[in-house]
Image 1: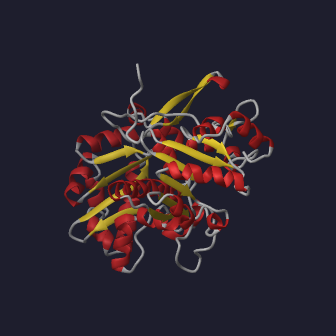
Image 2: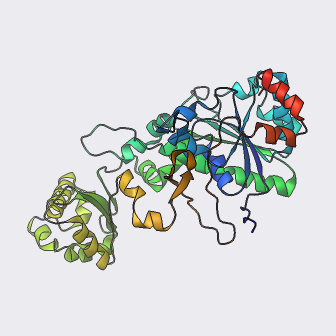
Image 3: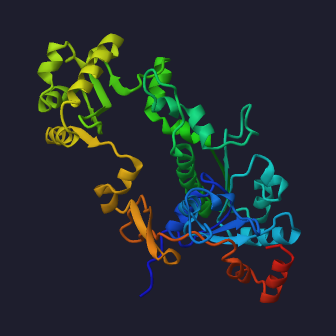
Length: 406
């Protein structure tokens, strides 16, 4: 029985990319059936092969590399060699998409800048990921996820009053950039196939993380003042809403979110309203005009939630048709019933470990062309296959290996 082809099974990607924002867009395409050829330096490969949790007899299985490169093919090329660049150019002639996330200017110096590859394949969609964007005073600087988080406002988005702002442990700028690159590149590919004209698609860690700030950033700009942190109390004095986390009696956090129409119903479902009225904290709208009232309302709610158990509070709120849920740690999330039931976390067999490992599943469901969860390649695993497809014979491939071209 033949396997179902993914929706991108007619797409070929060539990527000279490392780390996370530069690899995840193409890993997602590989999940959907695209042939993704990852170019790596002979002998060393992508440095992220040695990042994260390392398993296997020689630490050859990396949680970082597996997550960001599953399902792709590895071709080693020493791009300082003319012969290796010739291989790259032959691949580019057959490719739909090319991706790179080198420091600005490096791709051009190494022979695979946009104009250089466009001359070889005018239909090529060329993706370039940078740290700050291609304009501005810091356009030439390299950067990492921390840069995107620091400059976009993410640190404030997750800050609490009186506490120092910090970037987070999860690479949200990298991942957001990867997903926006994924979408932008496929949009450009649609255009290229309709018109025969390729183009360069540029994304950045900072720009992507700014987009992640969504309507909260718009509101901040319109008000010209920073938002309330610690709990999201928004709306107007007359129609306030709240999204906030509180700990229960055991220190387990939960979150609920509601609009003005839900406030009284939610507080009555929790049996909180009488206490809130006694303390003068029953009018949520006052939190938007008085810091003192905001602190009183949040402190009163915090004290009330500490009188019971999280599961009970969540059940009461849900019974009243109010959005509420426990707050998961990362480990909790990996075992969450909804996460598992929908395949957002999956298991892949690793014969060399004699056991399966939990990995990311797919964030989509396709009714006809389901995603395929693969493994990351060994360094140079697909050298022979790819070079033979380009017309190189076994003797030539062996000679290229001896000469350290591949």
